[in-house]
Length: 321
Ligand SMILES: Nc1nc2c(c(=O)[nH]1)N[C@H]1C(S)=C(S)[C@@H](COP(=O)(O)O)O[C@H]1N2
Ligand SMILES: [Mo]
Image: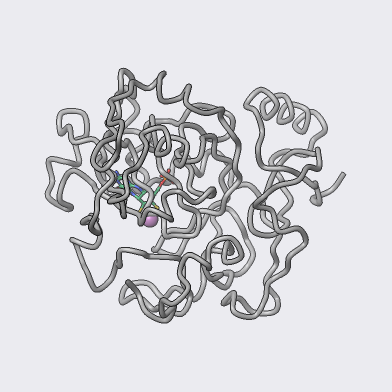
């Protein structure tokens, strides 16, 4: 066995855990093969609607010819101790400490707006909507660093479909928790609170868009957005709101936190795009945390172009929106 573990990315948690133990026993650790758009972990080969087997970098990816598509899981300690979570602190080392006592239960999520069946679900009701799947995704922050994370969750589409979207639903607005007593960073006005984000309806319904409640085979820790963290792997990390309490289907493009903060720097769409240089961060390269190799060229749509580029047909990809 080597790094080329053919795999499928949909894995029951039990299997993930036992497989992880097996791999550890074999001394393989947390290495994982990358085969293209979405990676996986298991040794069982299986058809995947997302995997693009053996796909190397292509022209238009934004990457150079020497891009290696082989990825290794980011060490869990990095994922849990290097966090952007301004509700707690603007220092990435702080959320692990400051959120340690944050209790993600009880929790409830309201799904409302342009739906036939608005509802408020507690966490157990929500988790019972769909089985947990494992998805190993690249995560790219607009600051230029990246990780590779084995998320647990289910497609956001499952939750949206259960609420029965109405014809007028064109966008989905996400709201994170507002609770300054539990989130000390909200006492500062560094951002407007609560944190809000949004997607167009087709982006929200896309099978890659994951409502995550776990990672590395465990429930999410508070610093990673417990109990619910939205994951949209082809967009910059800030599009994926943490600690979500409300999901509202709306007919017009909703306001989003970083766009309110600086409209010129953070467009509504914010798809990972090497050709858009943002004033504070060039997007041409990225640093994969935990890797010693030189910086990597940024891939268009974070490497998921094959799965999502169709959503943006007709839009000028050299522009930010
Ligand atoms: N509510 C909320 N969601 C948020 C953020 C935040 O500060 N508040 N930071 C975003 C940014 S910039 C990133 S890179 C990711 C980080 O997620 P992680 O700590 O789980 O890796 O969360 C995103 N979601
Ligand atoms: Mo980020």
